[in-house]
Image 1 (cartoon, one colour):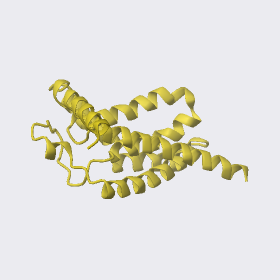
Image 2: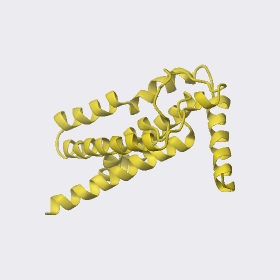
Image 3: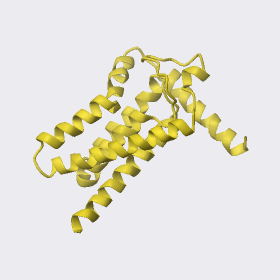
Image 4: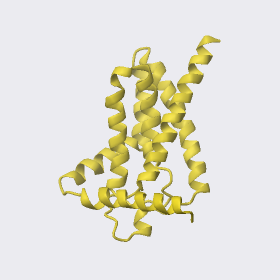
Length: 180
């Protein structure tokens, strides 16, 4: 392994260890255990469908962009997880504090983080005044994935990158289609 890869791995684990061990508190456990579900399939699909079917225009159109971004990003995450089979932290480090159901798939990239970022990115682009709030919401979901012991920081960062990237591309392509 190159020196850069070793350095990155050490920093990734150090940050994981800090969030997963040093930041743990009995009062934070229920918050992060609950908050993490905002990035789950049930919640992200339900929210996007609810907005698509019941919100007035233009919110319903923006929700369609969110659904498209969610679908495309899920496909990308599935492909990457099969290609890059990274074990979850609790499989590599037995001292990992896990306060959630243990998962059997691979950890890289974080699907929950990808999902929430792909859902909120179109709304952040269409409503810049809400961007900081939506970004923080998505960021807390990503942080929760590390806190509950299911992902490394690099998993979360990659998920955020994929979610934002696909969300931006979806909105951009939508704007091109609307012009045509």
